Length: 321
Image (cartoon, rainbow, N blue to C red):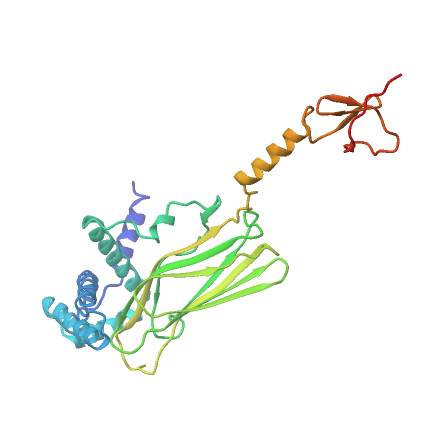
């Protein structure tokens, strides 16, 4: 009992030394509620703007300020808190993960169906269709060096075959004050025969993104490298700019060889007719047996000058002694 006392004291000290958010910034629980309401408000703005870009911008801005007013937070307080959380990216990432879980639970409660992205979540790492992504599935990108890029690396194993195709997909959530959104996704597939395939895609909208890598029948995948890069535009002084990527998946599809197509009905009829013509007793065919030919069920005398299986078209004459 005495030996365990120092361990208990050490644990209490470690818990007491856990860093907390300074009081002048928005606390994690409150920030989570603000971000949750923010995404709900942005979705409402998208529904009411009727796809007019200028109208959409003003609606989103109005909804954003309505969320801040609801939580009794000024825009300056919100932006200054983001600056603090930018320097504590892991804490901000954890907050955003909770926000995504709440949004997904709310969508399910409202009867939302399983989307195209989630239909692959049940697949294992083996099989003809498999989710082979084994790295982290949630990434937070910020407009600062070392935090605006996520590197991708997948090393293939013996479960990869020639002709495999791939689909890299994820969900993206933008929080932008203004300006254009641009995320560059680059994937480079290297094969055992030293050939490479490069795919580059730009993402500028919240929602699901899919990047496909076509099949290669000349070689088996050796490795897949690439990156997701948050492009910082000319509005570098704006604070409210970040991207949360979730549900990253790499779906591998094994190629299936094309099976022989069944014969058509016309071809089957031709085969049956040719088979019937080969049977004895058919007047259009001749066979030989014991030096004699048979035509229409009658035996014909063998003609040494005629080729075998050849039908003699001359009238048949009865031979008399």
